[in-house]
Image 1 (cartoon, rainbow, N blue to C red):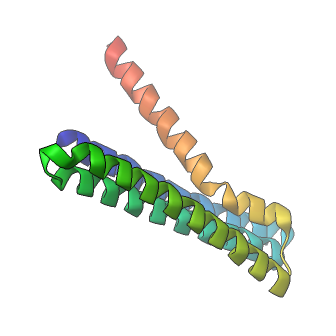
Image 2 (image 1 turned 45 degrees about the horizontal axis):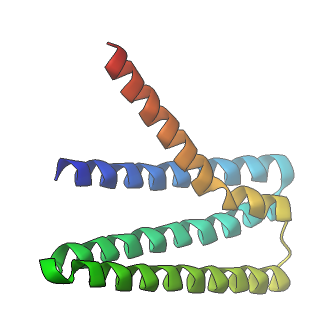
Image 3 (image 1 turned 90 degrees about the vertical axis):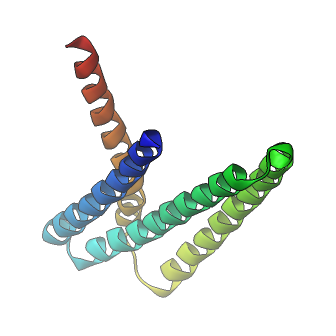
Length: 142
């Protein structure tokens, strides 16, 4: 139970750091390169954060379904949920790619800004994991 709360806190922290990075990148981009760059960061960030949120929700659903399955059906449910998860993941990836294509053909975007926006979740994962590892290391060495 404590582990589930800890994992939930880590995912929530990742989302919060990603939101903070988005605000920083949008503000800095607006001040340094103008509104086009800031809008591009926003578009990339909305896409990647939406994707991360959906992935988190799907993973929680899979774990919930496996945990509530009967003991004799666990293997079958695991296989079924694994296939369902992978299918949904790739379907959403294709949809998000098409959405990015549609937005980029209808709006003028700075692709470096879009890439920076798309990197917010990755940067927040790296930051949270590194800071968590540093905390764990300092606790173990004390």
